[in-house]
Image (cartoon, rainbow, N blue to C red; front, top):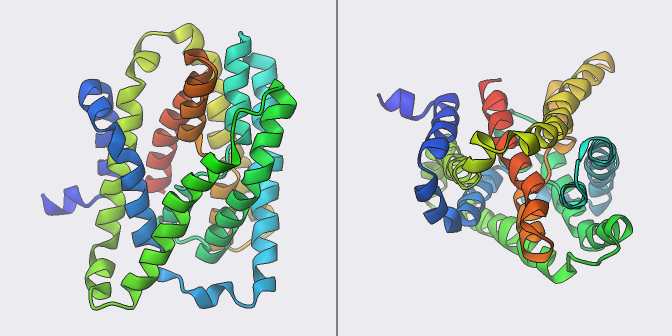
Length: 295
């Protein structure tokens, strides 16, 4: 029984199913999403040291790679597909918010789970998140005509979900509890993602079970920009004989955005319809992570 409860695929599938069944409970647990992500990131980052950022010139390559994959490649694909498929202007705005969003925080812990290049994912994600303070408001303004996403809001998210967990992880790695955290690292990460996926699926239960006219075109964009792009990047990586660890990081950097943030911004600053793309993408990410976990 204990072995099943520690199985990553079982936990992620359970989160998806229970989210669909217990939407009211998921809404009550919504405030636990960001803390759960912070815990997951803290535990994941205990395996990296500040020495990995030295010399400073070594961070240039990861940031350039992450910027190309997450903003230019993924962002462009999302915008092209959304421009072609979205039936309303509000849904188009919602996908602009997704395309302009920073890289997803889940990239970092899933790099650990997939034995990817942790330094590449961590430095790339953090660096592009910092650049997002300028890029995200600019992209939103160019495609919607409104400066909806403020740098201050992005900075607060970055501090909560990246910088503070990283600092705590470094303190843990130098403490007496480090061996215990290392022993339970996989379990903590898996159940942290259970909280996130359960909540995202439950909150958006209605979209998944009832509103198919909106769900289908929005889902096509979501599926092509994660599953489709992941398959393409993996194929190209194998053709170019890129090492598997680095290839796994490329796949994550080119397929995962902070879609939940996009949903929140769409709801707060535009309309309920503008929040649907971010919500649906978040839900499809849950299935995407299940597939990655099985891999």
